[in-house]
Length: 481
Image: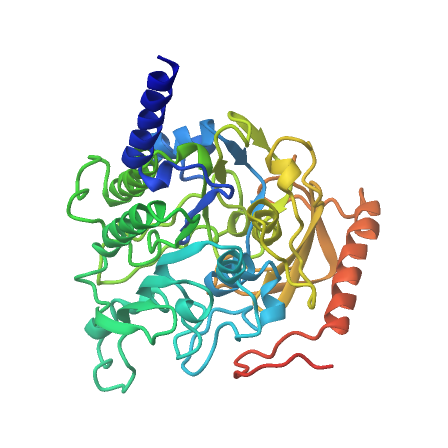
């Protein structure tokens, strides 16, 4: 009888092993899904007071925030390229030579010497896939698949290039169109189709489908995966997918919010269907704040209206909080406490060392890393993030210093096409009392610069110690000895 029970138990174990998909087998390292919106303001999601007041509820974004940690003081760089450089390398973009979104042609982006988040995770045993906008290089050696991603589908530059073919004089200019591209590590990416206005409203659906396929394939091989989704919405021109056109009843922008929320929901549902929810970190955030109003004759002003930075002043390409603070929610069931929010200062650079610690990755020790490792903060073991300041860049210029709830502005600009105002003495703002950064309290709080400027002095000294990589530097790059 005992022998029969033993054989029955053995058969049950064998059958169980046969029918359980490999994606459900316990895995030491968590999967990571990083959703990185484009020009998506702090005030857009319902979990930051947006959603219905913007014309459409955002139930999937809100649920994600409820199930994890919401940060109200998550900071990024003021432009697309610098922000992408910072999150990928854990370093201020000034260090990598990518402090400005490139307006012209030629070589730009990350040199091979830089170590990206994808390379770090790949070395730690992750399968890596990127689906979306890169904006860190458009020439051989500078594509995502040259920088740690096993596969990529998306665009090398930015969405404002989609209307080029329809602009007067473009066809005779000699400037090459942007293409949607696809590639694998070790191969030069292929051009699939021109990136034009006919594909503009469709691309984010395809990015979602590609990411879903990647997660399904990756979850079956027993290795952890890193899925990076730098979506193209809500960058100009903001055109809605036909499936969502008119769906909200409140105009194209609200339709687009519904679209973004639905695509996030598709990713979350896929994670649930694969049975990997408890072992997958999901992050939802953005590269910088909302755009200024665009008036043009290609699409209606309504579809290109300025997004919402919530209570904060400013749009992208400024040093104001509306440019620098973006939505942030992170979920890791059973590890990151649910239903929590924090106003602790966190910068996108901090994700590199933090995810490295969680994933067993290696942070480069031969260069200055500006990111701070915050795993105990994210996991609820520490109340403080460990960061109390941020140097505020706009391009190559330092516009200010943020220290705790105080802001020192040396320069101010209202929009990318505005006039720069430069001050002999910094303007000082208390962000708790003055979210619009309009009440200069320098003379009543002259002690604040005495503290905050020490952060700037330390940063300046680090740039002397390790000079920034020149913009447009070619490979192979070697740091000066």
